[in-house]
Amino acid sequence: MKTKHQLAIDNYLIKPIAFLMNFLVRIVGQILRIDHSLDNDFKHIVVCKFKGMGSIIQATPMIEALRTQFPDAEITFVSTKANRTVLEKIEHIDSIICLDDKNVFKLISTMFSSLFKLMRKRPDVYIDLEIYSNFSTLFTLFTFSKNRVGFYLRSSSFNMGIYTHMMFFNNNVPISEVYLQISRLFGVNHTKNVLYPLFENTHDYDGIPKSEYIIINPNASDLRLERRWGSDKFNQLILKLVEEYPLMEILVVGSKDERPYSVKTVEGINHPSVKNVAGKTTIDELIALIHKATLVITNDTGPMHIAFACKTPTVCLFGPCSPDQYGGNEYTTVIYKKVFCSPCVHDFNISPCNGDNVCMKLITVEEVFSKAQLHLNKEFVPDLENKNKTIYYSDQGQKTLGLVRRTL
Image (cartoon, rainbow, N blue to C red; front, side, top):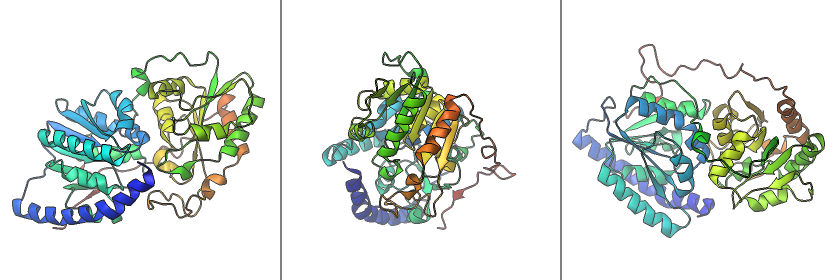
């Protein structure tokens, strides 16, 4: 399904249903007085993130924390079919349930079959990591899980019945820490915030160049196309890299659907060291390529998070999203132009600029090239000043901060 169609269905059909169901659930909750305490030894925990491979990677510290706290529990992850390969690499996940959102009919059929599987298991806890999805909220309810945990935004305050616990979504904190904060609701003292090393469960790939190489990712998923830096600018950047580093191969990556944009990116470049492999690699092969790369230059999207997990040196370009939330590790150079309306993705389904992403257009080719040179010339020095800011996740009594409580 196209994202714009999904958004329309979510806002105009599913949201009113969720609003009504929230009202009914709150009444039932008052009558039944169910104990929703989270200090139990849970046997079945479900985590859900339908969209965003990068977000799933960022959730791996939370999953590891839950596994540490509940070593004997079954941990199930619910997502969409496109994310199965990545999920299968995470050893802390016991079972995977995937919906197929290729079209409406597949989505409906796999939704019912998935709900049936979950209802049979009756999870003790269901953690919904989606932030803006009314579909995910309604799906959470019909799993009939005893404890249902979600994120609180002002726009989602009506969900305080469907979810039994809601965590304040702070978009000024790294997303991996936001996810970890949910695990702390269960008494987890786990503070290890290290992304799961996906490459450990990845097979060798024959297509890895023998010499040093650079990966260019000009794409961004259709969730937020305004995260893309211009293909013309990537084109100019590649030409400068070829001239300065003629012995390095340059691989342009992307999915099958993103190949046309990748083709546009390398248009007019006839150099043997530049190869467009978009649509020609599996997720496994992409992870292997990123893991062995000398440098990755990318927009804020899935391959960026793979690079973070692989600890590969990265130059990442931000605009509509905040790098405070998604852009940090010691191997990374972030380029971000903080225009007045950025970050907008945390508050709008459709950005105020309606695709005229000035925040990305302000990034110059010379700026990206100079940052890439620092990595390629071994002159990069990590900026640790902004990565060591103290954030208090609990009070002195070790009460987890950010839990939004029901008023009724």
